[in-house]
Length: 137
Length: 188
Image (cartoon, rainbow over all chains, first blue to last red; front, side, top):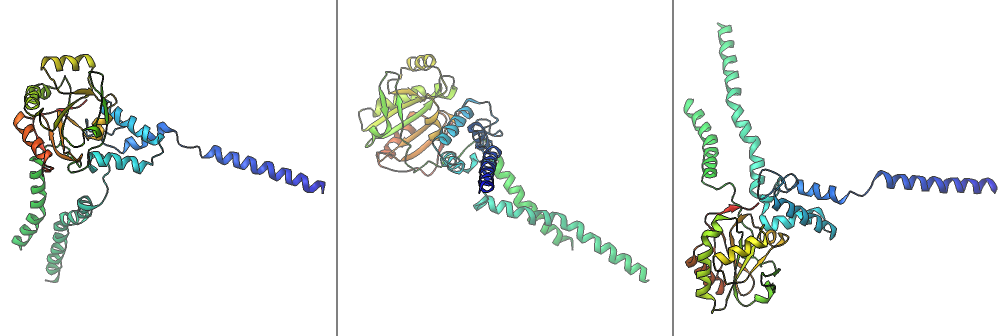
């Protein structure tokens, strides 16, 4: 009985240790980190070739403040990005969604690259064929 | 068959060249607004005379909202035109509202005094109103119909005649198919 209770105490402390360890291993992302992560995906409307996270402009600072405020209000990263898209269009996303016309552009890259490479491929067999005919003679 | 190869090459290159040529005709900085024909985001602004003004209070009137800054050259160029337009429509069911951006109170007030601006003006303290209206250039003007819907947007300096005609359209609820464009400065 005494042995049994000692084992229970050991298991209890082990569970506490594991639980505390798991809490320590996966901390909640810091608000600054979350703000930066979202701001990295948004295009600065002033610099245009910089993200909102990297731009030193006053407008980017204001946009970062809005991101932070919306995170504090409990909005998800997607909701925050959708907010900026509703104001500036998909242009504001540094990585546009692959739908509609942009999807067509993404899809058309491979066939165009294939076409561009094809003349080199059509040359090769012709030379080989000519060479083989010469060999036959 | 060389003609076949030529045709294939042209079929590949022509659309790419056409796309490039189209790109050269466009202003790469221009951001097309998704807000036209959408409800104007409500906001409250503290005016330079100390009063507070809420957009919702203006429901039932055609509203002209102009984002400006004293350091912006096109804003200076349009300032007299805006006051002229205001004098012509102020007795109708129309309202003008100036929203100063990224500016000091001192410079904004000097600007209003210099151009003898008499319509209400206030400051967008946090820049939130500017973001809510998708502002990226300055000046930017928005026309809102009596139901609170954005009917027209003009990026850059605007003339008095256009302000009046677009306000008359807004009063009737007519939504413009395209945005207008004049000389503008990038915001900071």
